[in-house]
Amino acid sequence: MALSGAVRAARGRCARALSSAVPPGAGATRGAGATRGTGDTIFALSSAPGRCGVAVIRASGPGSGAALRSLTGSPEPPARVMALRRIRDPQSAESLDRGLVVWFPGPHSFTGEDCAELHVHGGPAVVSGVLRALGRLPGLRPAEPGEFTRRAFAHGKLDLTAAEGLRDLIGAETEAQRRQALRQMDGELGRLYQRWSHALTQALAHLEAYIDFSEDDNVEEEVLNQVRVTVRALLHELRGHLRDGRRGELLRGGVRAVIAGPPNAGKSSLLNLLCRRPAAIVSPTAGTTRDVLEVALDIGGYPLVLSDTAGLRQATDPVEREGVARARARLCQADLVLAVLDATSVPPTPVALGAALAALEPPPGTPCVLVLNKADLLGGHRASPSATGAQGPPATLLSCKTGEGLEALLELLTQQLAQLCGDPLLGSPSLTQSRHSRHLGACAAALERFGDLGDSGDLAVAAEQLRVARRELGRITGHVGAEDVLDIIFRDFCVGK
Image (cartoon, rainbow, N blue to C red; front, top):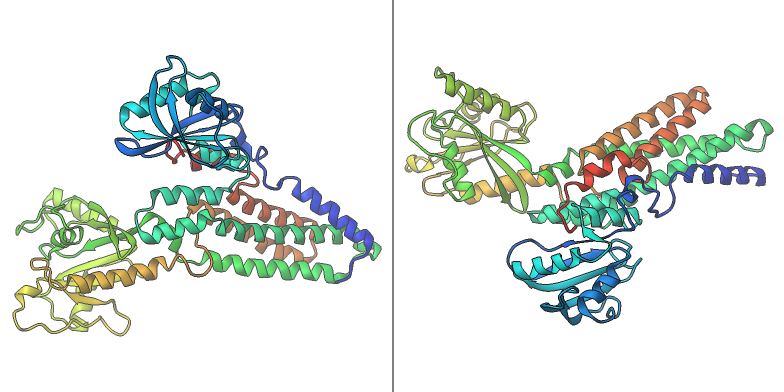
């Protein structure tokens, strides 16, 4: 593709105009991230509250060095080197503790500002004494939830996707969640969106050049064709990214599994067996479970939110009817169904199992696992259960009373969870937030409109669709239009992070 000098200059002007809304790195321009008083010095307990061996107290801001000197009575130690210091109250000169201090001069710190850390003994009296001493220093104030990370975002140390990954890493409870959060925190998702944004920026610059200079024969038709090729390729990649089956969201929030079945099939017993505690009341009386009982489990490294529900039948008691209605509602929201049946009353054949499963009315397309409970009552007649046809769900025998068959069930569950959540270390990083899906959907819609307009020759309006698409991508990473999402993202962080 040949471009004349005039066109290259025009393209440069267009690119500079486009990128002016997205300063590289950038912090102070990233909206509300810089509005909380970056001249303040903030401090907080960054480790978990409560009695512990070592507690970490962090300060960030221009007064961090002075605060460290005030509490230790000595100059800051060499950068990023731990030093043993006596920590004193600057007002009373009373010794508070003897601990390690670390000095992180900006911009080489987590927040990009001057930072100091005090690693003190984790007794409540020690921690509260050091925090009180910091609070009495001029120019220092307690940090708000997520304010350290928000300052890191404001100073260009990480984008919004990385900040969300950090929040998810703090809250990770399973191995798979940790792997996904760490990958996002390392910036893989943000780099993917930045690459797409860069491609859109170049396409828009070339399109603007074509609109401005094509009449002077300075820009070849190939420029417009290349823009169309770029947009089509990007739209194809974006659609594939959106068709991930909500794997990232399921892994982040947990797969919602519902135990469903007729009364007295052993649903509550199964819940107790899986969570290894008497979480639900078990009774031989049918209809004991009236409400939805929910527990969070780690199955094979995957997060599972398991719900026990009322037995599905035509109930006459008004309270039980409400329980059945709630069970039906929860079943409609399920990502996975554990259909529990009485093995003594259902023959383990495809026809019988298929009819019993159909009677439960699971949501179409929702994965199911058939659990034939009460295997201990079968005696020597233990035919292996068959799936409900070639494409039917897997089935397994189980005795909630003796625990026989539990390992096989856990293996089936792990396989189902792996299919739903995928491997967080393979392929492109997954979508983890509903807001990502929303902005990517809007971006894809704008690119589709560009294709319709570009083919019809309405290039000025088509260029606006590229701007819309680029703006939607920027809102995910926080490079443009971040003000409306900053509070939502950072308010969920703990104080000290």
